[in-house]
Amino acid sequence: MRWTTLVLALHACNANALLRFSCSQLVTERLDPLVNPGVPESPHLHQVIGGNAFNVSMDPANNLSQIATCTTCTFSEDFSNYWTAVLYFRARNGTFKRVLQKGNAGFETANGGGMTVYYSPQAKGKVTAFKQGFWMLIGDAQARTPAQVAQFRQITYTCLQNANTRSGDVPNEALSSRCWDGVSLDSADHTSHVPYPSSGTFENNGPCPATHPVQIPQLFFETVWDTTKFSDKSLWPEDGSQPFVWSQGDPTGVASHGDYVFGWKGDSLQKAMDANCNINCPQLKTQTIAQGNKCVKSQYIEEEIDAWLPSPPGGMQVTAA
Ligand SMILES: *[C@@H]1O[C@H](CO)[C@@H](O)[C@H](O)[C@H]1NC(C)=O
Ligand SMILES: *[C@@H]1O[C@H](CO)[C@@H](O)[C@H](O)[C@H]1NC(C)=O
Ligand SMILES: *[C@@H]1O[C@H](CO)[C@@H](O)[C@H](O)[C@H]1NC(C)=O
Image (cartoon, rainbow, N blue to C red):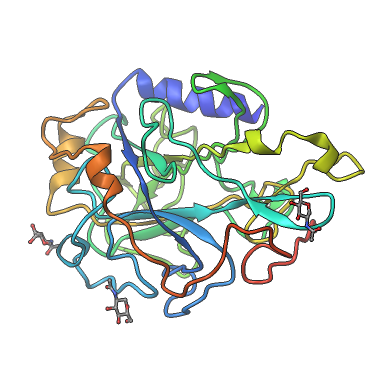
């Protein structure tokens, strides 16, 4: 069911045009400048890609393309930041181990796996690029039931038997974005300034609500978690439940979430949207994955995340309700 959703969304995109590119890992740490600005250790761990201006707080008045000195993305004018929670394996003895990521098909060499980012300009008519200071998120890190995240569409998982086949239930994440009033760069909940189309979907040209008539690019993140090291079922919980938990202590999977801070240089993203670029984009500057891999940032506050840990970092308790 969830699998079908992802495939339909991407299929609809493929029928038209979409940018698809790799961003290597920038850092994996407990910062969340959007939800916990200025908090040097946010409650849970995130994996972050994009420009190296990512920081404990990020002033929307700052031009990220000027502050950052490098980006992990292969479109080298993209100094945006994108981040998600991190997956942990909970062993039968109650200790936790980070599940590492893996580069997506075609992007195998991306440092730390990173994420694949898609911007889809395929709606009918003008698609307006995000502006400096534009922030948003999708999903609810505290949610534990499907009903609590029913308003978010297209957060999906799929199991990769290999890099190109898809079935089952291993995480693979998508962030979709929506309609905009053309003015509000953010909102208190970081989501209500970008409502979904009033009916239908962005892919089938569902109309934007009258209050938010501006079509913005649809944004997807795709993350591949390498669960193959945890296939020994003798380490799984004795009750047979699945052993993976999100770094915010979510064992249900519904609290998957993704965050975005816009940071494309100048009008580069608008140019790419106007050109209706498909996968590659001659209008944009590029760098190799190897060049992107050189852009790394150390943790703001150093913390062990890869040992067998008594809890996900930050002392997060696993709560199923
Ligand atoms: C991050 O923020 C801190 C505290 O505001 C500041 O001292 C530091 O220079 C910033 N680092 C970067 C890379 O912007
Ligand atoms: C828990 O189990 C894992 C996997 O077998 C093992 O590597 C780790 O050392 C164990 N931790 C403790 C505290 O027993
Ligand atoms: C940010 O800086 C870049 C590089 O100098 C420039 O091209 C762009 O127009 C600036 N953006 C804004 C919104 O000032």
